[in-house]
Length: 117
Length: 108
Image (cartoon, rainbow over all chains, first blue to last red; front, side, top):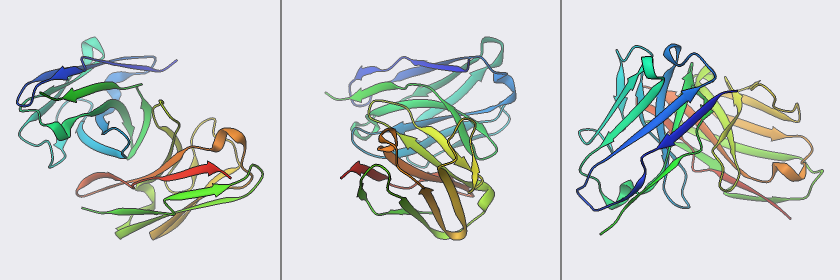
């Protein structure tokens, strides 16, 4: 059974930092591009960042470029998102999701990040 | 960046009825890169349709996708109680991935 389990969310002050993790199991993690997608409370979905299977290609949404860093460790079947200079508008549930072609096939249950003073 | 506009914002129907959800793109989208997702409250999105018209594994055949260019449609032929949820279209292009704002399908 495919599982993606996010962790690391919580309450952080504006300007602060947080590191999210996503532990994968049940599929060949090293063969898939991985992504972070977020959803602000009561709002729609927003793609945040992508990383290719070997970490050769990395992309970010303009809204997080220069502040967030995506990385992965295929030996540990894990995906990460380092978030710096956090703003109130970064408050959201953050999902990790696998990418096959151009489609998000597997999703985790998400971890909530709240940016507030 | 390609903007996806979904309509209607809310669709009120009864079980057994047919639902037609629209997704319109601000510029042409490759059909290979258009997908639909279902999201229920408190849950992660679930992939329904990829490549504009291919059903994902385990998705009932009452769900179908169609369209090309800038106009895409998700059709649910006969609504079941578990189909009432929010539906998102998504595309991949030069600006990255973008989602529509969602259509809420509610019980009438």
